[in-house]
Image (cartoon, helix red, strand yellow):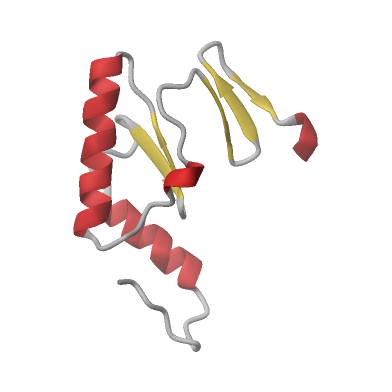
Length: 97
């Protein structure tokens, strides 16, 4: 379990570094991560299943938990960090503008 102390002022940066370390060779290959937001992308359903399993295994090995209620699987449109990501491209979320 990752616990930060009260005197640790740069906890988000340390957590981002921790996530980057956990997903080091997957980042930009089939996933991207910003703090606790992880986006997994794949060209085929079979690869996507394999990539999701790999990311979940890595998070579990690092003793990090997943909120299953916030997950989306096999979608072609998703909201991520104020953006709407589609197969055709990326646009701003109108609610965030």
